[in-house]
Structures are given as structure tokens and as C-alpha cells.
Picture 1 (spheres, protein in one colour):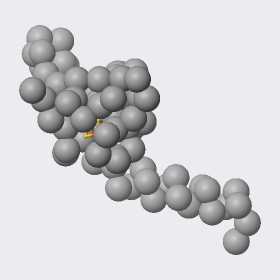
Picture 2 (picture 1 turned 30 degrees about the horizontal axis):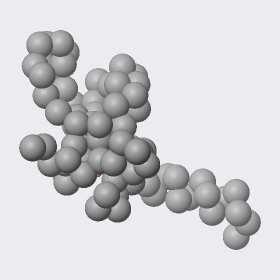
Picture 3 (picture 1 turned 90 degrees about the horizontal axis):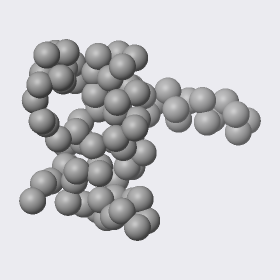
Picture 4 (picture 1 turned 180 degrees about the vertical axis):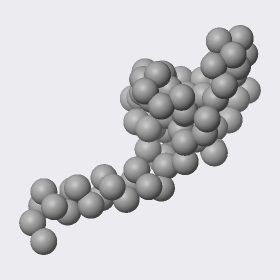
Amino acid sequence: MNQTRENKEQTRSLRKSLILDPIHPKDYRELNFTYCCEQCSHFDESTEQCTIGYEASKHRQKDQIKLYELTGRMAFCRFMEID
Ligand code: SF4
């Protein structure tokens, strides 16, 4: 299997494993809910990494907003923690 095909299959597998939750537009507009790494206790601003080793790129604020605008859904991290 060549590298490109392997990368495509990994990307496809990752997309399948990511759970996207629908959010009602009224809730999105009116509720102050937590949805991204920048709001999480496990996020290190200086390195922009998750301190407990999860893939932060799927839950970053700009990506969550972009995903919501495209699909009406967000990929909430099940390990998010807030102080
Ligand atoms: S636990 Fe989840 S939400 Fe928190 S920093 Fe890590 S990846 Fe982001």
C-alpha cells in the first residue's frame, strides 16, 4: 500500500470515529456553552496541545465554528474539563 492511499484510509477512519453532535441554531446563538479546547482545563495555550495527549486539532475553536457553519454539528470532546 502506498503512502497516499494509507493516509487517505487513516483520514477516512478518523472521520468515522469522530462523533458530531447536532446543535440547534437557537442554542448556538443564545447559550454560552463550552465546545473547544481553548475553554478546557487540559489545553496548554503555549504549546497549543492537549496536556493529556488527545488530538486537539479536532476540537479547536476555529475548527469547531467552521464545522458548525458547514454541518450544524460540533465534535465535542468527551474528555473536556472546565474549572
Ligand atoms: S481534553 Fe479534549 S477538549 Fe480538552 S484540550 Fe484535550 S482534546 Fe481539547
